[in-house]
Image (cartoon, rainbow, N blue to C red; front, top):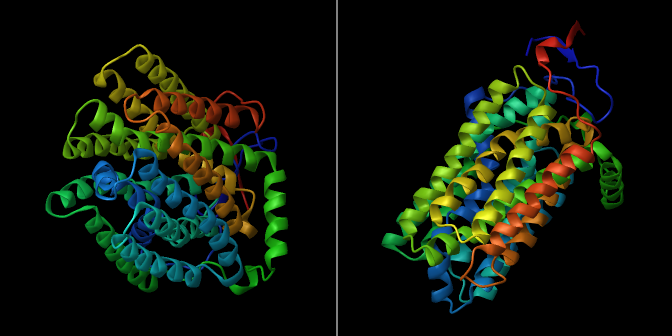
Amino acid sequence: MVAGRRFDLSRPPGSSSPPDTAAPAPRLGGRASVVLILGALSAFGPLSIDMYLPGLPALGRSLDAPAWAVQLTLTACLGGLALGQVVAGPLSDRFGRRRPLIAGVALYAVASLLCAAAPSVAVLAALRFAQGTAGAAGIVIARAIVRDMHSGAAAARFFSMLMLVNGLAPILAPVVGGQVLEVTTWRGVFVILAAIGVLLVAASAIGLRETLPPDRRHPGGVGDTVRTFGRLLADRAFLGYALACGLAFGAMFAYISGSPFVIQDIYGASPQLFSVMFATNALGLVVASQVNRALLRRLEPRAILLAALGVQALAGVALLVVVAAGGGVWGIVPLLFVVVAILGLAMPNATALALADHPRVAGSASGLLGVLQFIVGAATAPLVGVAGTGTALPMALTIAVLGVGGALSAALATGPARLPRPVASARVRAR
């Protein structure tokens, strides 16, 4: 991006990339530290979910709970992450970014400690809901802070940089969780999550400054928030990109919630081997996010998004065919890799495009974007375990349906696609 310039992409509404801009905002600390902190904050989802995945079978045995009840703890966490975003987002529009952020992360640490002491799967599910609700502040406000500073392709590149950090969470979290299970039980995983929460409270308080000055805040109450959500949902472009995000995320979450049982119980892998396989898929996501940064120098975000979601849909359908035909684990693993890794291309662009036209309500828009993702994910978790742990077919079917739905949402809900063209061909004009 050229300082002091903007790119006129000559687009019809909702059909192409928004202008590539860096909106003036109060300066933060060093760029590297900001990327590190915001990336870690936006990683609360994978941290809260992925770290205890290797321990799900053992957790079920410890609490004498069936697979569907154990997976319900995933649903509860996702439900909390969804609700928390529609609360924390508008609060950050009203009170600024820092105070709601620090309060939410502190409550996350407390809830994580309580999860470690849960006496039953029902209590654990309730506490996981509280944990997710608190941790959502980090996710939604991190996105809003990026939107305070950037728009369009510039925002998509920044979101891709964040994935260098938050992409490490799904790589390291299950590996750390698997090793923790070597020396303690699943309860120790939640103690570690509490410690991470404490560290992020300190990092946010020291390393992040306010990016939403008082003159840009919205003092409205609940009614104003509801009306804002209504206007966002009436925006076809926002709704299309948000649904694409949610359905693509749901396809990945079907893999997240179903693969521990499929890979370990059906195919006999150890928790440690599963952790390595899971980390490899997450590494693919990180690599793809950096490929996305390079592609954005030549292609529009929407063109990359449509191609990426199309690939995910094809991989999901192929996975369903392989599972239905009785294929072995090495026919499944590569397709799961594609389903996960391709999100490194899809999510940064979909997020930037969804938030691009709503700078004055970035917190609310970020919250609504997140809630659609996590509602789909929360609904997905029980579906993949509905037939028990003896078949991978429910997981494969869910991934295929959501993958196709995500591709259709991006292609149809935002208008007809144009052929990809280099961003460099756009007319550049001085402000």
